[in-house]
Amino acid sequence: MNTDLTVPDESPVQMRREARWEELPEIYKLKTERMACELALGLETPETIFTAYGYSAEQAVALLESPSFTLILERIAKEVRESGLSFKMKARAQAEELLADSFDIATDPYQSAAVRADLIKWTAKMAGHEPKEKGDDGKSGGGLTLSITFAGQPTQAVVREALTIEQ
Image (cartoon, rainbow, N blue to C red; front, top):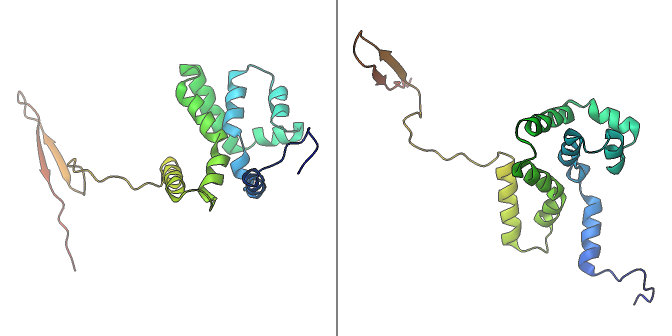
């Protein structure tokens, strides 16, 4: 038992979580969207923002020269200019902040299978890997659309389905 009052005992769950956090790939620990949002809003100097996120001057320059970060920053700056800081942007920043926790829970064998499955499905959906629903909106498959307009008459559309020839 720990007798030092300044350092609380760590539970096995907290110890396991910290060990798993250390094993997370660095990509899940990045907070680039939130940082880009702070830069776009300009509430503090870029130096202050980069320092708060643990970037040295050289690392900040390298990040600003990165095409992927530049795209994120441009997209967020455009959204801030056009619509201010929206709920959607705040939700994106929160989702990015919680990505590491989501990964930790989804890969933790001690979590319930239902929770893990929900997180896996949600992550796949957010990544755009969810299968698209096939609706019959008349636009499936090939074909030819021809519009003929005679003077003084409304447009009439003639649609002919594409033929498939098997050899």
